[in-house]
Amino acid sequence: MRLAALTISTLILTLAGCQATPDLATLPHATLAGTHVDVDGDRVDTFQAVSINGRNVLPISSEPVKLIGHDTTALLAAGQAVHVEVESYAAFYGTLHRMAWDPMRAKGVVEFVPTAGASYSVHGAVAPDVSSVWIEDDATHQPVGAKVSVPGRAASGAGNGVEPKMRSGGA
Image 1 (cartoon, helix red, strand yellow):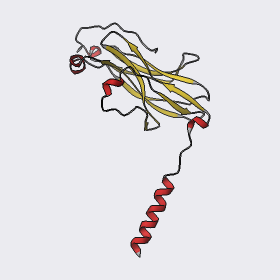
Image 2 (cartoon, helix red, strand yellow):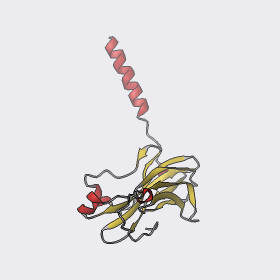
Image 3 (cartoon, helix red, strand yellow):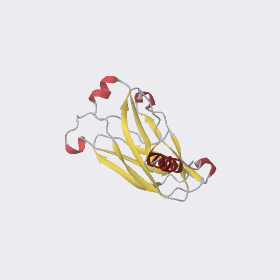
Image 4 (cartoon, helix red, strand yellow):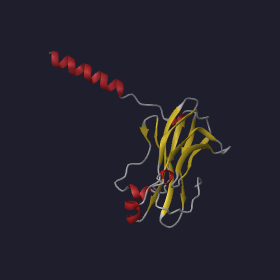
């Protein structure tokens, strides 16, 4: 009898935790898109949201290299603070480059309050000395929240002397 009472209590608590979360598309929301830059035939600089309020937003794939340069879009609840984990990195199609080259990565959290109906994009700059990532309001092209910057190997004098042609942001 005691086991049945415990089982029923556990079942009730489990069902209470499974209540449907509201669909953001039906509420006031904003959109957030990742961007990329095709630097050359082998390199793509990618700027993307990894998670929003602790929830992973990247597609799950058994071959992540096939996602390089494919932008993702997510919805953000409007009018309330969001914590967006963002990253920028140089990705290479060639296996040798992927194994041997410094990916020049920046990763961090940007916090801001989205406006209903607004569109935002993740942008960045990837370079051997410092890589950065930030979120911009698409209408004003102004950053929202803080810019994340991470020093690279070249900043410490450990670079390999190769300077790839750099561009930032944009789809």
